[in-house]
Image (cartoon, rainbow over all chains, first blue to last red; front, side, top):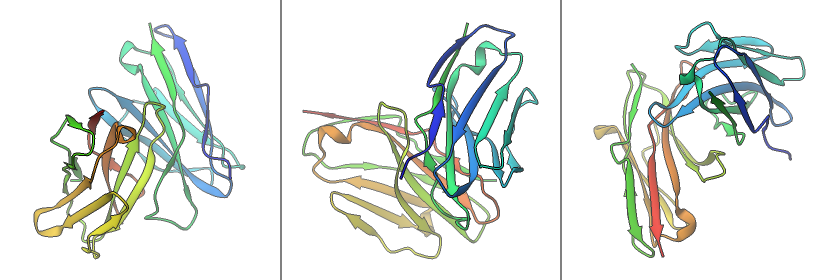
Length: 114
Length: 114
């Protein structure tokens, strides 16, 4: 069974640009969550999607947005990039019925903003 | 408010020593779930264990064991006879039953010296 796949793995952008990251969950998983990991803040929850609907949102500015497609694949977008957006962005999926189930993570997309 | 605290930022042990990683959590929910994840250098978080708030039985899995104590809001993780392959960052996480958001601690970086 393929795991969670994130693309791209690495990317470099400059301030003011925008970026789109992609996540393909484990087959059959309909819940996709995004987390930002930085050395100072640890893992911070961005948002969670289930069946194309955002179910939960963390405390991030509106520059951070996401969506989920009918095949459960998800994208997150960051507009007007700032230096502080440099981070590892992790996507995680969870099986449909498992409200309390574990998250399965991808390897992340490492974004560097110059 | 939901919060997970991992006070130990970095730990170094010599191979074959035992090591305990501490995790203290805060939640007002009566039903919640606790998790431990391992993050090797590749970046992908690997699920280790899930425990619900009604099950205070300790668990052992090979060299790994977990001690859940509701009275002290702690969910500590012990590695017995540590090995170099155990070197990683370990995260403790809390997921309340009322939502799908995971709250992660800031992680403990474990280095096992050969």
